[in-house]
Amino acid sequence: MRSHDQVLDETLSSGTLRTLFQPIIDLDSQAVVGFEALTRGPVGSPLESAPALFGTADRCGRTAELDALCLSTAASTLASSDVGAVRVFLNVEPSPT
Image (cartoon, rainbow, N blue to C red):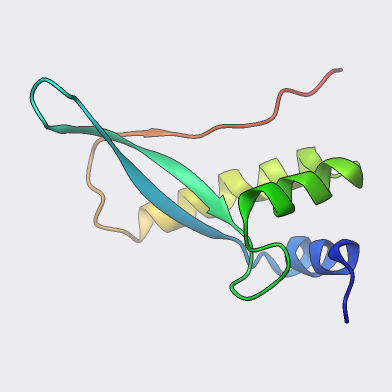
């Protein structure tokens, strides 16, 4: 069985992240005002869930690398989606420099 570290290595090298778009709703108007881009690991892997994926990256010192891939994946997924011209929110991990 592959370790979490091995799955992270494979995921980062192959770029097999997934981006899901969660609508952000204005409660007064019930209108969709934007989407939050949510990253998930490869389906069926031990890093499919966000806590497992980001926890492993943090433990391995690879959070910045994961964040960069998340941004790239979100942008390419957005470009090929029908989300439309609305606000998209991307969360990244603050990094001390």
